[in-house]
Structures are given as structure tokens and as C-alpha cells.
Length: 635
Image (cartoon, rainbow, N blue to C red; front, top):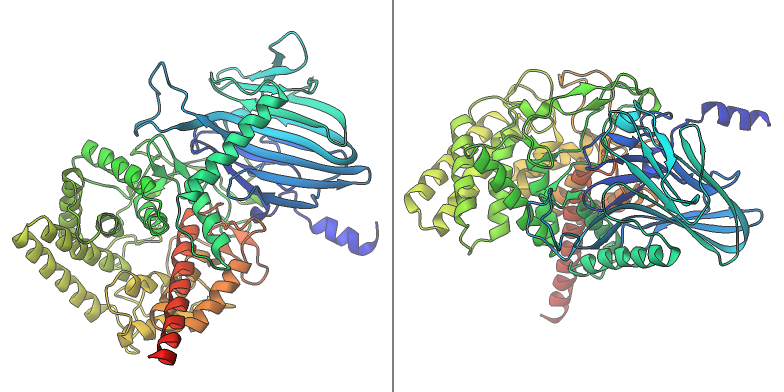
């Protein structure tokens, strides 16, 4: 090995880059597949359950790899168009191999009994509870290795493998004290090496094999023909779902479609909840402590997610989520906390998994999220505005949601004068955060419109007056001498959350203070054009270490630049952000602006919803500009 190769090898991480993972989903659980063919993240039976493959957080916490012998780097990777089914193509000196991975979806299972997990109305489809991996030699011949090494309970409990049939094609992994059981079904011959189920085969051109990992009473495919049929059904499911959307004929359409599929994949179908990301504790700071569990549903994030999906024509998901919220609100007497478990769990006790090394030694690894107990005033405004946008200006809000509107508006009016932890969930003392006040205004403003449609004129007038009072307070206390909105009332520091001021209608985009704020953030709160949440040396957030640029904030800047008429600058920034996506058009929470490396949990719902809003804003502005030129030529 030459000196340069030694240096590269010495500095190489044992962990794949976060943005090199492929994301799979069956809308009940999710999986991440590394570029070397290893499934390194799978939690069962739900998205927020303990992992059975957790190598993304510790190389000894379980993985399931299928790849050519002696080859780690694939030639290419892609999603089958319009799906969450991933294909990895491999070149070897002897031939070419393709591995296709999917979490299977099939027809509705529960024809003779009711589902134990679904609380939404049954549909025509259901998660099959099977991870299917189909192996195909397309040219020459390739030696293929299969190694399945689960580790239950976040890597704490090793499995015991045993055969479950007469031959070598079916095996079961169990563990003492663990309810979960894994079944491996394949047309290869399985053997056991300690905690690993393994298989080896030489595939020749045109030959196919399959390996199915299942974890429920529902039968996995048992033949190659059945496996390929069920894979095709899954592909068609995703493509038919995407066909419901309304996507513009534009060069950026593919990013909109991939973002929509990702948001759908982060939806927990049994309840309608949408998780913030598929993972826990992928670090915002390399080697640092900013590691959080995002496998829960934030009311604020989900409200924005569903508005983004709604703008593309996907209204079923919004209906399901609002029913989830109504269920939770009724159980709590109308109150809403800022986040919940995917089945509506209120208590999300936070703990650390000290036996795990963490991704590239970023510790602690956390499960649960203590932010559930924080007070964040933006939850009220996000919820009421989402209901307002979902129902539209001329539609009466149904009684169930109207009760939520009343409660959330009154909570906002009761508490808007108080400090809170803000949209970024700081773990220091509460402050009078500007956007939190704006969110309380959103609750009163949207609530007044909804009340007016319902004929509650006196209530509408009271809420309208309260909205004006909140706006006056913000304008008096949150604008500095430059005419720029600050992070909170007692600072001159900037904060990317105030980019939402023109986007939620708090002030018109023509207001000079809006323009000053957008341009100040673009010039002063960016690194290589990408936006920071805030500068950590100017904000006491209760944590140590730096962080990368927050991609959602950068997409907010795109939308805000469009709003103030800076279309050329918005288009340039949007193109840069889209180019910074992973090779599969996915995003983690942050991007290091110097290296392009993605940081934080992955894939991140909040980022993908902001992408949809930003790209849609640019496309609409481009088309309006084109219509204007045509009008000027022929008017």
C-alpha cells in the first residue's frame, strides 16, 4: 500500500457517511441500507422500537449484508422510479450483480380478524412485515455472500439461530427475554456461525436468488416466483401512490417526488403520525453530544409536512393525521403537547444507551426525548394554521377539529406573554422567542378566520383583536435599530426561524422589515450561502459544540427570497441545495457547508417538507415571471 493510500485508510471511518444510506419503509417500520449492502438500521416491530440491526450506532450492534465476495463499493445505486425500493449494482472481475431491497407492502391482511395496531380506517394495502432482498446476476458469474447477524434490544442481546424446516432454507432467530422472533426464508442453503446466519453461492448470468427476513405471523415469500411477485406489488403500490400527486413538469420535479415518497415513508400508517426522522442519535456535531431521538411525531413538524403534501395533492395523509391529533386531544381534554409517540404515547422518557459507541464515537446515544415535557408555544399556532390551510377559507371545520381550534387558540392567548424554549427546543432557560410570539399570533389569526366561517362572529372579533395585540408587541420588542427581527426580545442575535414571518403572513413580503431581515440572514447567518439556525457563540442553548448548517433553514431562505422578489438569488441557492442532496436525493438534518457531509438524523422530514415548499415557490415565481413577460409582449 503506498503512502497516500495508507493515509486515506488511516483516516477512513468504519461508519458509512450518513447520506450514503438508502431509506426503506413499509409505513410501519423503516430500514437503512449502507452502500456495502449491509442493512445497518431496522427497528421492530415499529419505527420507534428497539433495533435488531443497529450497526449505524455501533459496529457490533447487528447488520444484515448481501454483497459480492471481496467487494465493498457498488458501481451504482438507485431507487426503482417512483418507489422506495432500492437497487444496488455491483461490478466484480467476473461479472455484474444487482441486489434489490424492499420492505414489502401487500394487500390488506385482516379479512377475518381486526388489526391490533390500526386505528385509522382500513385501506386496500398493509405492511407485509418482510424485508425482501432479491439477488440477480446480470452478466458473467459472481460469488455472493449473505451474512445476517441480528442483535436484539439495541445490540444488547445476541440471537440463537435454529432451523425451522426439514432442509436448509428456513431459520429462526430467538433470544431469551425477547418477544421478537426473526425468520429467515431463502432459496439458498443457510448455515450458522455463532450469531450469524450465513449463505454462499456462485450466481451465473440470468440466475436469481431471494432472501426474506420476516417478523410476524404473516407468511413471507417461500419461492423466487412469489418473492418477485410481491416485490412487483410493492413497486406498483408506491408508483400508484405517487400517481395521486400533482407535480409540475419541471427539471426539479424528481426532487419533489422523492421528498413526497420520503415523507410518506416516515408516516406510521396505523395511526397517521409522521416521525421526524427514521433514526436516533446520528450526531449534529461529529463526535459531539447533540444526538437526539427523532422517531416521534412533532405536532409542529407534522402540520408543516402535511401542508407540503397537501400542496402536491396528497390530502388523505392530512386527514389521517388530523384524526390522530383529534384522538390525542380528546384523550387529554383538549390539550396538546409538542410531540408524541407514534401511537399517541405522551411520556417519552429519555435515557442513554451507554453500551453503544455511537456513530463515529458521538455519545451519548439517546432513546426517548425529554423535549416532550418542554413548553413550546409554536405548537398552538402550527396546529390551528394547519387546520385552517387544510379546510380552506370557505369550508366549515368539523366539530371535532373545532374543539381543538378553540382549545389551542385559548392556550395561545393565555400564555403568549410568557417565555418558552422556542422552536429549537433549547435546553437552557426560557426566553421571549420572536417566532414563538409569531406562532401565537398564527393561532389567533387562523382561529379568527375559522370562527368567522362557523358564524362565531363575536369570538372571531375577539381573536382578531388578540392577534393584532400580539403583532404590535412583536413589532415593538423584536426589531432592532436596523429594522431586522431578532431571535428573542433580549438579544440582537439573528435566528433563522424569523424567515417564516413572511411565509406565514405575519407581515406582507413588501414590508421593509421583512426585506431587511431576509437579507440580513442571507448575508450574516450563513456559511457558503447555507443557513445556520443561530450562531452558537451568540445563543445559550444549554449544549456544547458546534453544528452544521440546518438545511430546512436554507430552504426557508429560498422561500423567503422568492417572497421578497429576489428570484434569481433564490433559484441559485435552491439549485445549490438540491445539488447537496445525497446520491438518492435524501437529506439529513444538517449539511457541513465546507465538505458537503450530511449530519444529524436521516432522512429528515422537516428538511424534505421545506424542500417541497421552496421548490414549489421557485417554480411558481418562474412561471409568473414568464407570464408577465408574455403579457408585456402582447398586452
